[in-house]
Amino acid sequence: MIVTLKLHCMKKLLVLILLFVYLNSVGQNSSKEGFTEVNGVELYYKSIGAGEPIVVVHGGPGLDEGYFHPGIDPLSKKYRVITYDQRGSGRSKGTLDTARLSLDQYVEDIEGLRKSLGLKKIHLMGHSFGGLLSLLYATKYPENLQSLILVDAGGAKDSTAMPTTAKTVEARTTQADKDTIARMTAAGYFNTLEGRSKLFPILWKPYVFDKEKIPSISTSINDSFSFIHKHIGKTFATSVLYDKLNERLHLVNMPTLILHGDYDPLPLSTAELTHQILKNSRLEVFKNCGHFPFIEQQEGFIKVVDDFLQSIR
Image (cartoon, rainbow, N blue to C red; front, top):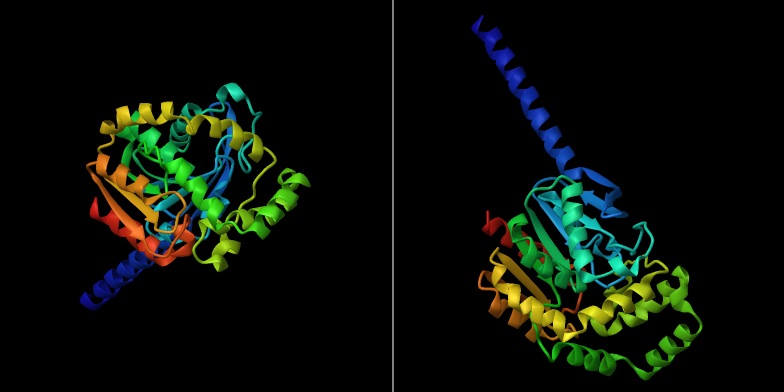
């Protein structure tokens, strides 16, 4: 009788263990993509993994979420990683209403996406222009964030950032590449997906330390790229934006991780100034790395982000 009871208990325990392993495996490998209605448009999103949600905001303006993969995908082993295409970008749907094509609207779209996907507090990761959007979101909706992760991002006001970036890109672009870019642009390469796929690898050269990694920057830039880039670019290049942002940075008190490649044309001084202002922040600099650390130094990037997220639990 005792032996039978022990066997029965062991079988139940084995079933529970197998069920736990199965559910854990399903959680880690879960993947979903599609469209969700946000503020009058259909935003394309991709969700992989399970756990605390990390919403990832792409750069540009006018790029798409594709270049994050597979670079950030290892984070999905512990977290739910959500990437999306911003209004008018990538696969997102909806007419381009210039009245609603603004930084304020992009910030509201992050909030709308959070609500649409039924998320509570999130970790928000922003890259490049997406980092600026994430910082703006943090000043408006700090109560919705567990943490903020800024990756080679625009940040606190630095009057030298834009001119320095432009000069660095200019200096790193060979005359042969300048001629090729001019020829391709004149021939309308920006106007087709095939043309852009040939043009952008040349444009990325000044931004990447290891040029062999450039083919890994995968983007599917739609026909609205040039329009969005020029329209939004006029806004975030002005000092008015940064003056307004600096006035509100004291509201950003959540744990913040600032990541920056030392070869990025965007000067390190921008990241250092943001770190100086945000008292609850830490700065990590990747050596021999440009604008895309999750591609150029994937292993180190994943470890630094995971260590940070584990430390604030």
